[in-house]
Image (cartoon, rainbow, N blue to C red):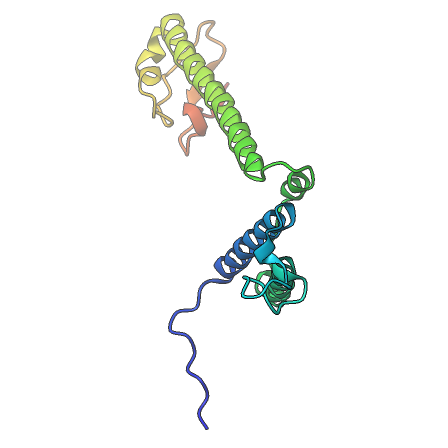
Length: 187
């Protein structure tokens, strides 16, 4: 005896669950319609009706389909055991709201935070440019070093001694960030 060959392409677990849920929802909808509008042909006692021979008639058949689909859904529970669902989504469903509202609210919140962050970055960039321009006007000797935005290792200008007692000279070596240079007091 040979075993039956496996299906050529098995659907991903999430898709299987979604299909089972869609079938269950369709059956529940049909059950609700049957319960609200009972036709003579839907009764089990009607000969040659759509539900002849089924206990409970068409409503009984739909109830049986619902039970079978719930059983299939229960059997598929292990396929999605490691899926994390945000508690907010579960709360939306419990409140009878569309769970897509959680996604919409999340995207809107992220968009607002992104605009706020971009505003801060823009303000800092504008302030840096203004500071660079003002520093260039206040210290013309540094104007060349300040005008190049990527100048992190600008050479330090030599500062002559003003009172003859102290003079500062640049110490050779690696420069710090933003053109910082270590200065040593030569006495």
